[in-house]
Image 1 (tube, rainbow, N blue to C red):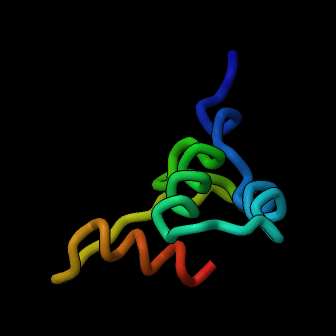
Image 2: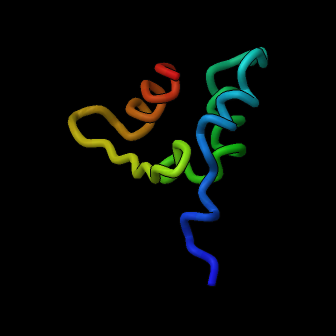
Length: 71
C-alpha cells in the first residue's frame, strides 16, 4: 500500500530545479514553486516530512511570501 508521504515532493529537488531560473515577478516565482512542490504546506527534506503552518498577525499570503523570499 502506498504511503501519503511517498507523494510529497523533496524541497531540495524543487529548489535545485528552480536555482538559476529568472523570474519576472515575485508572483511568478511563487506560482512556479507551488506548481513544482504541489503542496507548499507539506513536503519532504530528504526522508524528513515537513508540515508548515503560520500564526500571528500577518496574513497567510504575507507569511507565505516571506517564507519563499527566504529560500
